[in-house]
Every structure is written in C-alpha cells, then in structure tokens.
Length: 397
Image (cartoon, rainbow, N blue to C red; front, side, top):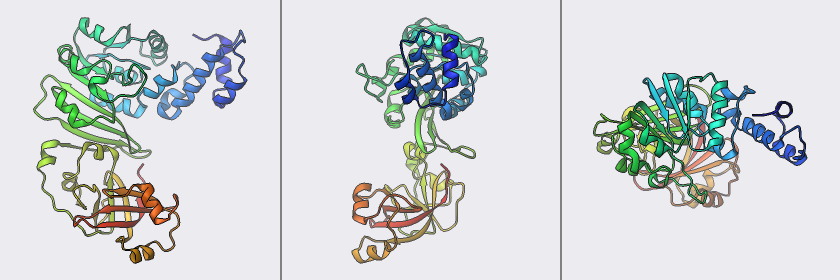
C-alpha cells in the first residue's frame, strides 16, 4: 500500500512532531506520498500507549484520526476477549480491527465485517501482519450481513455513535445500527452477543430496552470510564450481573460484581463520624451505582446516601478506588474554616454531594490548584456540610 520512498520517510520521521512535518512536507513530491505518510506517523504515535503491542511493528497500517479515536485500547480489547469463547465469531462493526484482533485468536472461524472499504483494506494488511491468516473479511453493512449470515457462537457489535452531522450520540436508538431493532435477530444468529456502548449511557435505561442481558461490564482505564459492555445470551436469567473493572497503571485490575436487586434491598447505617481513612470508589463503581453493597464487601461506613464516600478507622488497603488519610476536618463556620485553612495556599479541591461547584468552592477557599494536599467537601449523614484535609494514602491510578 506504500511505495519504498514513503515507507522510508515514515521510518525516519516516526518520532517527529506531526505538525512540524505537515508544515514542511511538499505534497507535490512524486516519490513520497506525504498525506499517507503523515497519517501513518500520526497513527503510530497515537497508539503508542493505547495499543502498545502494535507500536513496534513497521507493518501495521493506520486509518484516519477518527477511526483511531473510536477504537478500543489494548487493555479493554483483551478484557473483551476474556469474556468470550467458542468456535465461531463475527465482528459486525470491525472498524480499525482492534477488538477483532484480540478476540479472534480464541476462535477457529472468524469474520470481520465492515462497511467502509478503506478500513477493510487496512484490516487485510494488519491481520496478515498479526498472523490472523484465517480471518474472513467482508465489506458489508452490519444489518445486511446479519440478515444472510450463518449462525455463529459469538457476535460482537460496536454500533456507531455519531449522528449524520457528526455529533456524538449515546442513546441506543440513535446509534447505527439501531440495536433495539435488530436485537432479536442478533440472538437468532448467535448464542452470545457482546455489545459495546457509550460510557455516557444510563445503564438502567439500557437494561429496560435490551433483552436477554446476562452480564453488564463497566470498564474503566486509569479511573476513567471507557466502555459499557452488555452480554446478551439466549438462556439469560431474570437479572444481569454487573461487573465493575478498572485497569490501573500498575498491578492487577480492580474488579467487583453485584446485582441490582441485592443493591436495592441492602440496608446499611450511615455515619457522621469521620475516621482515619476516607475512600472514594473508582469510576466503574460510581457509574454502576454499587453504593450500599460495597459496605458488605469491605469494612467501611458510608457518610451519606448521596455522598458516595466512605470511612474506616483501620486501613482497607485493597479498596477499589482512591484511599486518603484524613489529616483534619472542619465545618464551614467562618472562624473554624479560617483556622483549618492556615498554611494552605495550594490543594486539589473535590466535592461529593455538596451545594457548591469545585470552581466556586476554590474561590471561596482562596486556594490555588496543585500541591500534595487534598480538600474534599461533602455532606454527612446528619446533613451537615464538612470539608476534609486529606493526603493520598495509596496512588492506584
């Protein structure tokens, strides 16, 4: 797909600033295809941290910036692969092919379906480079292919989340294809259907419109929610299990599961007593709404029904979230607050269930961003507003 001069240019400039290259490139040069070269250099730089196992290869071809922006990371792709098994697998929305490339080795028969011809050509090149020689590539629309395809064990689908005008959408019915319209057909064609949806989507709303959901996986990367995965199965029970997983820079991923009935029926006591340690759950847990049941999994107490902060006198070192050591606390009484803030001119300011925004609170406190100190404003079980002076005990993200 590239001539020798273009390939050489890419190798020689793969670490260069893409903006500087674009300014000095001469698009009229016959030997070097500069637009193509710039796309490849930018693509390789983009995936250095996102898909590290591909970064060292000179053979991987890269698509447009939008396709790279929308593709999965290596960590989340590997996680999807861990959920699936069988003999035959079809990815109906192949895209750049990251999810397909990590899932396909677990199956004997694999089908990559993509409606954009350019992405199919890139996939053909990359699958060869990755040793996925048995992958069958089809340039087709997901809905059209679904109608005529033979049954497989597993279908994966990641519907497009852009409107006709290019705006991002998150509602299931606004995606392309519309999963609500084709979900029955999906389960006719496969025993298991894994759907990737926007992290902005409301999980309760999704469960209300999707049928046969056996599992929901809320996937975060370094405490940023990246994906919602819904596993549909023909023999799914009445209620889906929800798994929250967060991949950190170091160590094993944090993972915890629950069901919504147990969470709803869980009865706990709340506390207005701040102990030595404060805990904030990771992004996946907050997204999934595992607020009460987590106090049964860990020896912690919740501060308020809506605060989603927890405390304990003894350290819970394996808590799945941020852990702080409490240095001091104060009410918002003017004199008490003045004493509390003595010596603090820089701090990281956060809120949970508090009437002011972070910006407004920072202005009120007259504290600049930065430093090692954390100031956390929240509401206790008795309804009182409080501000805490914290030091991060354990950096997990």
